[in-house]
Length: 213
Image (cartoon, rainbow, N blue to C red; front, side, top):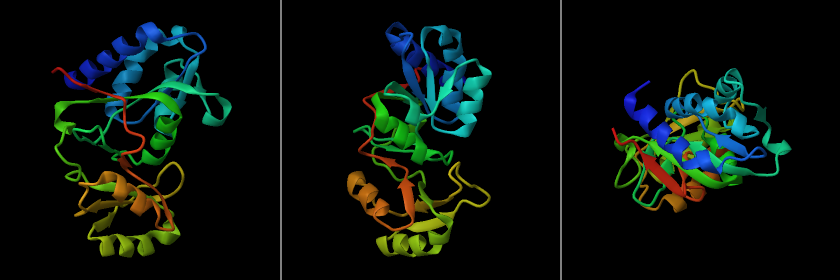
């Protein structure tokens, strides 16, 4: 684990530690930075009830650390959602989905009162778009969606050998103008067959913590 990821994970722990309660459910994202957070969080597992996870991989890690994992349908609410990002702009808009979990990440983020994003400085950008934008598609719609993305000016590429936890495929898209992320997020999600895309402009974090290393 890199020092920068451990550093920002510890920052997130410091932020929530005094706010944990025995009935609290946390939302937990996906990825290597979140894995560092889960490692740190395990020391405080006695202070909260459990977690809702955005991926099977995170669920397995949480359970291995003795943290109970709940289905979102079975909880009334989530206090904090903690997750990383592939890009963060100056307005806290994100690109997520490098780990193919952005659909569930967005769902869990939407259920939380506060979304805390944990990143290192390399993820901070002036404008989104250098990182390929993941678009989750139902397999039968892949070619149709790809043609519509091309018509928008994007270049879609199938992420070979990757299936999401929902059994869908990922198109990684470059070439789109993301200067208006809300518009593109809505446009892509209007295409039949798109489950969700990796722009977080409506479910963006209330707090972005950046590694101090």
